[in-house]
Image (cartoon, rainbow, N blue to C red; front, side, top):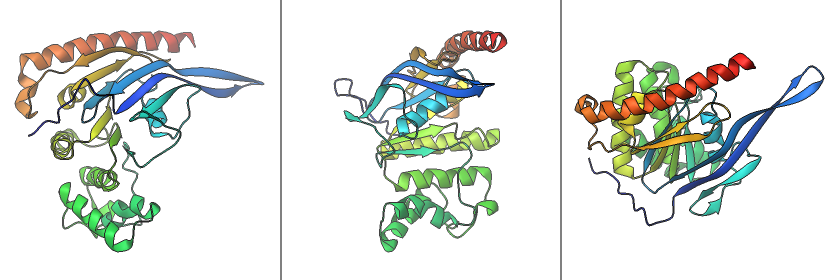
Length: 276
C-alpha cells in the first residue's frame, strides 16, 4: 500500500477555525440555548486520514455537518484550500452511518444520483458510476436494489456514490457502526485501500477507539459538550494497516492513551447530564 504523503509546509486542505454552535429549544414559555461546539479548531492536510472520537453528544456529527456546509455556525469559519465554506459543495462528500440509499433505485442509479444533480450527461455518469462500483468490489451488482444487499454491500454503495463525485474531501459519519464486526474489519481494510489509491483527504467520525487508531494518521479527541478539541494524537504505526498492526505494543500504547483522555470526557459528560 502506498501511503499518501503529507507536506507540513503547505497550507491545510481543510481548516476549521474557532467554530461555535448553539442549538435552541423551547422550554415552557422560554427558549433555551444549548451550546454544542465551543471554539473548535482543526486543520487537515491534503491526503491525510484523520479520525475524530469523543463522548456521545459532544458535537462530532454537528461538526461534520458544519464542515459540509449543511449547518451554519454562530461563530468561526471553515475553509477548503483557503476558501470559506458557505454551503455544500462538490469539493466535499459525506458518507453517512445509515447508508442513505434510495430503496427504489438500483445500485447503479444510486451511485449516479449525485451526478444527476450536477447535470452530468447520462452516458458519462453511467461510465463514472460503473467505474466506481467496480472499485469498491460490487461489479455484477449494478442492477440489484438495496434490500437485496448486505449491510456491508450497502455501505460500499455509499462509498461508490461519494467517489463518483470526485470530491477532494470525504467526510465519514460513523460509517461502519451499523454492520457486524467481521464486515466492519473488511470495510476498514477496503477503505484504507481506497484511500491509498485515490489520495483523498478523509475526516472520519467514530465511537470506536480501536477503529480510530487503526485507520488514521492522527486521532482528534473531543471533550464533553460543549464540544472542543482536548488533544490530537499522532498515530505512528506502519502501513499497510494489516490485522497484525493491532497486536503491536505501540498500537496498545496509543489506544490506552486515547482511552484515558476519552474516559475523562465521558465522566464530564455524565456530570453535565446529571446536573441538567
